[in-house]
Amino acid sequence: MNNCYIDRLSDDLLCIIFKLICEEEHAAFYDSFQQRFNGSHWDDWGDDDDYYQPGPSSHDSDFLSTLISAMEVCQRWKCVLSQIPSIWSTFQLSFRQGATSLEHARTFLRLSGSNPLKIILLWDDHSWIPQSVSVENDLRVEEPASREEIMASVHLVSLIQELYAHVHRWREFTLRTTSVAHMYHALSFMSHPSIHPAHMLEKFHVQLVHNERHAAHYFQEPSLFPGSVPPIRDLLLFGIKWSWLSASMFSSTLVNLRMHYDGTFGDKDLGYKRDDALLQLLGGLPNLQSLALELELTFDLDDEHPIVLPQLSSLSIKSRSMGNWTSDFLRCVRMPDLCILTLDEVEREYIETHRTHTHEGILRELARLTDPDIMEDSCLLQLVELHLLNFTHRANAALIHRLYTQMITLEVLTLGPGAGDDNVALTMGLPRPHGLADLPLPGLRTLVVFDVPKDVLWHAISERALVAGPLEELYYEDRENKRNTTVANDWQDRVETYHRIGSVESYRYSDIVSRQWSELE
Image (cartoon, rainbow, N blue to C red; front, side, top):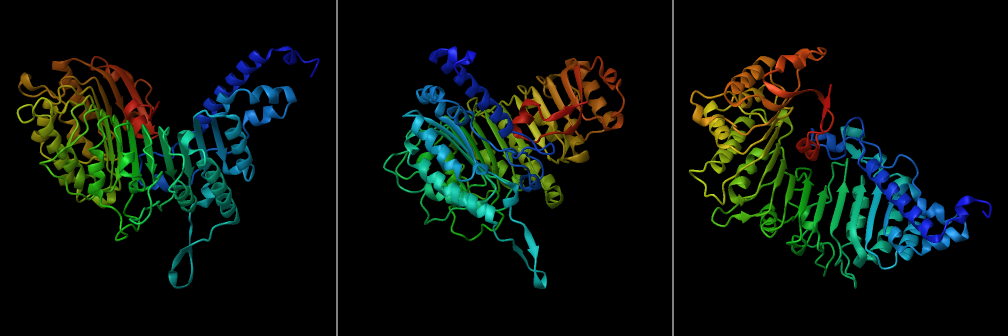
């Protein structure tokens, strides 16, 4: 390399170049980590089947760290890279690396010195998702694990064991897998006592995806990180029973919490902790800012001793039985700073006959919480955004009118797909009332609407515009004029900006809130 220009660079410039390359590599990896498959993300809020549909791994090609490759170029590069411990503290390992994943982990652990670690482990091959096969007498059993899955499990066990010895340096840890056996192996190791407590862990994400089974937890099993009180700020449990965590992990440091767990898949009578205990743990989270619950809950809440989440600004709930517990949750949990509420109930066929009265209970509770004559100022709900998906409601117009006129701070309303013609009732609450003193949603600026006939929406927007002026933004799925490129002119003088939206690209709750979930035509 004596004749190469790059060999003339000083060690300091080489360090800068290597750091920039690492930053670019991590950014590219994050994009691929969040990639979609056939228009769906791994964490979409669509039908329940979306969780379990086979998808690609987060790494369709073999992954080899640029740092590992650069180390092999020449002795000088190896020497320079070995003297920059900070760039070795963030690493991603894949099952595709096989046995070399352990070797790479040891390299990163050794060269990172004492720096805090940010770790991502991807063991999410869709071929490991259990498939049922028919046998005699129409019985169905799961296919046995493949050799590849067994070997991947062996490599993961060795890797977790090596990494857990450095748990005191973990700052961020993410594991995504499609195999429940792999997840149990990982959780089991992280439940072992350690002489080094996880005193730096701020982000902890464990994701069992595309698998109808879940990582349940029994009373007699130990919790994660025994003897530790990790200062976790960002916690994601996807397909992982919440009781894997000790009560100390639900601490005042927690800022973002998301839990997805479907307890209907064979989890009855197995000695799990009661769901109402989970709600009590939530009461110890004074600094929680965002909460996403994708759960089937049954619990008893005490109105006399409400749970207080004083800093919570965003609440998202997805549940097949949402109407059975959400109204109780809203009644017994104090959220004085709540600004964004997202509700999604799925499996329309199951709840078609039950949904009307259960959703009416939720709307009645929202109407109570937004009524200044009932609620004290410190408990009055003042939403800025309300997003409703698969939310069927056919109750009397007076309830909707009452709710809308009390929501004076609401700026964004989403009537998302999945409700069919039942979004009409919620849309008809938008026109101006007979009296001007109680204008529905007086602060509304952005409206997102699916599954509403154009004439109904036209009437609602036109009537409202006479009193409140045009909306700032309208997002509308106009099924009647999908091929009409001049349809935007129809909404002139009624909305300032019109977006004609087509099929939904993503049901992710974060995309719903940011309105990045719809395809503009």
